[in-house]
Length: 156
Image (cartoon, rainbow, N blue to C red; front, top):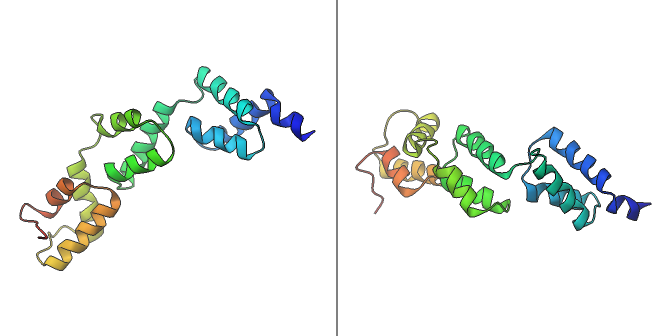
């Protein structure tokens, strides 16, 4: 019975739709989830391909939504791109979504710093280093960090 379920494309599609009803997935993520549920790779791939064809599954939409959600959480472009790369999405798609006329990363870095530490720009070297480390962890580049900490920021 189990081997019959593993190869049944309708059951695989139903399982995929059930997963998509709960949250959005990238095509690679959805295929891995189906395989973990016991579907063979070919059946899982066919179910995913059918959902892509029906436009129920779209990696471009997934990446755009992911970037939008994580920008609102105060994450920077480097962290977002790294997380999407870990999910197995194409680099070109990631780069396009992160760079696409979306957020002003300099402004977002400044907002994240102000939200966490307040509006005053730090004057002490230790505080600058602490705030820079926070922004780096959040995924902002050194240019974004310098901008958020003021023009005179330099840890060297």
